[in-house]
Image (cartoon, rainbow over all chains, first blue to last red):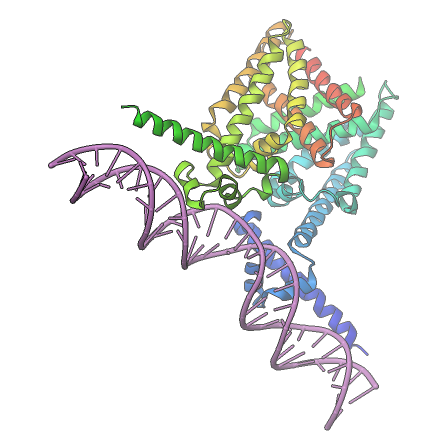
Length: 200
Length: 200
DNA sequence: TATTTTAGTTAACAGTGTTAACAAAAGTAA
DNA sequence: TTACTTTTGTTAACACTGTTAACTAAAATA
């Protein structure tokens, strides 16, 4: 009885087509102008069908938020694997974080911009926790190689993430264009200062 | 002929009452639920009168953004004046920045959160430029007392602001409550690291 | 074939920002 | 004081938004 399976597959395809149409909207006009109606229009179905696949608009945004954290986590893990020294990993990860933010500005703005209001459920985003784990473990490993092995890794992780997010978001609100070499020097400056203080 | 003056005064009062009603809305329900209709309802006038005093909703938000940067600038200048040593000023200003953010979360979220889209005109916000000047001058003065007098003050300013904004916004999206002592230690950790690297 | 379940539709509700067209009040000039 | 002009404010609408109730048509099951 492959009917049930076909139905599940069709439902999955439908869901994917909703996300695809939504993403196209986002790429062309940004998050602010994404609407259920436009999605329905794009997939050539009536509005309520979308609510059969997503509880509401926020659920659609949450899907992309997860995707974003998934991609960011993979990017961080990828560059981490290319180095042995934890401190070097930490620096490379900072640049990867920066690259991700500006190569996928739509994702980043959703994950950290619009995400602020929808933060009650933020602890339920497993993709975000994974990213956190990658960062924290690298911080811990760096501390282990430092002269101050009693440093508070959670505090340092928080500092690390804050510096990265601060640099990115300040740069992003300045203008939407790609950052210049000058901007990357700011990142390099801040992150090398942080790592230096971490290694004491 | 005091009629014209009375009219100007009345117009000013009207404008103020709009802002007052809007601010009350924001305090009770946040920026997201602020609407022209609710403001009109609160001041007991019809909707279009609001458009006689503000070009559109964004203009009302811009007014509060200016107010916010004005207050933040004053707060920074206030603590700066309480110290002589530039490095000490810089640290005190960081704490003042932090305090402002969490004592006036509504302002901060507007200034740096919702402000992102409306950033074409950000260079026209003179209140923001003033705040920038206070920060930059203190950075310059700190560099002047350091052993590396050739440091790029604009780069360092950018780093300073990014660290502060990063810490605040990461903390703010975690939960809306007031930050704990632990959170303040993170601020202290990050900012003292930055100042140390600045003094080299 | 008859019945039940599922899928998809139309139409509406309750909001939003914004504006055109019009009425009423206030100020000005004869 | 009357006639005219300007200002002020209103009603009603437009063009959107997210969401849902009520209904129909199609598909799967008995």
